[in-house]
Amino acid sequence: MALYLNSNTMKTPIIECVPNFSEGKNQKTIDAIAESIAKVPNVALLNVESDPDYNRTVVTFAGSPEAVLTAALDATRVAVERIDMSKHHGEHPRLGAVDVVPFVPLLHATIDDCITLAKRYGKDVAQEHNIPVYLYEYAASAPHRKDLASIRKGEYEHLSEKLADPQWYPDFGLPIVNKKSGATVTGARTILIAFNVTLNTPSIRIAQEIASTIRERGKPLKDTYGNIQTKSDGTVIMIPGTLKAVKAIGVYLQHLHCTQVSMNLVDYERTPLHRAYEEVKKFAELFNVEVLGSEIVGLVPLRALLQAGAYYTNNQPFPDTVLIEQAIASLGLNKIRPFNPEKKIIEYQLVNVPR
Image (cartoon, rainbow, N blue to C red; front, side, top):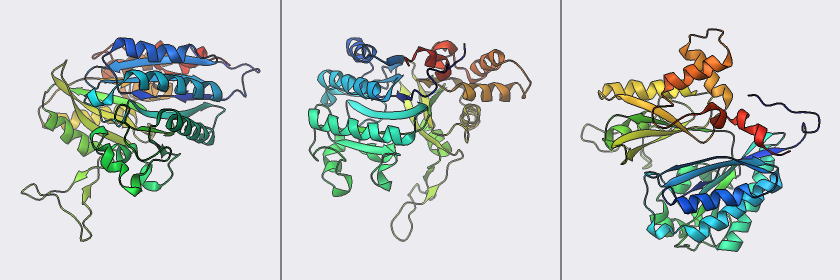
């Protein structure tokens, strides 16, 4: 399947939205969120993926800018009504019930279009639900707010401390904790790939060590006694990671009794799927740990799979279908949960987007 555009659709802007909700167990809540999006005209619900250990659901939908904004706001209303952060527990870092809502330009849309949507979304959510809202990535109001991990630091449990700091007053809403809903982060970004590599070990220490070794930010330098080393001004000395444009954490999966290196590949041209996979595999071997496979959360660009397929076939001139099959097999994308290219590749899903 391929994406074909006719003359009537060439200038229609298509924007993707990938909200992350802090609920991965209650199917009724997950279904209600998905249904609120699916019923919005000029929006296509492309993917819904939940994980009970992460206690998190990632939803992907796309459509015209106004329709996407409407769907994001409708889904937020459902999530805010049904999710209580004071009772939430999960392996994935989170700040609120509607944790992060990124807008992504796909076709005939720009980052500026997405920044505008993020700001409108943030303003409406803060006003309607009394939720503090932060802007991140391209929509960030200050350099220290660009990185999502920095905004999430301390998570929901320490949100009151963050909001008490003038450096972390929200971009929209009052610096007052919403105990039920927490805070929400929204912004504009380019396409990223959420990529998890599963390790055959229950040791979270090993998963965290591998994650901190490969991620671009790296890890703190320690002396032989394990003490973190700092500069004269008190800032921590960091050892850079081995991969560029990669964010990573170690996560324990209770239902599989194993761990994952959970990554965001924020620029898959700089660090493609196969490079990230092989790097995790290399360091896992140093711990005598086997890699069980991997999974992609949400959708993935066709080019990313073709890159991996070409790598694992030594750049032989095979058809796209063969390269995709090789990528799936070599990355172990079918080992943890089924991987259906027709449902997981962005370009294949775009044929479902109204124009």
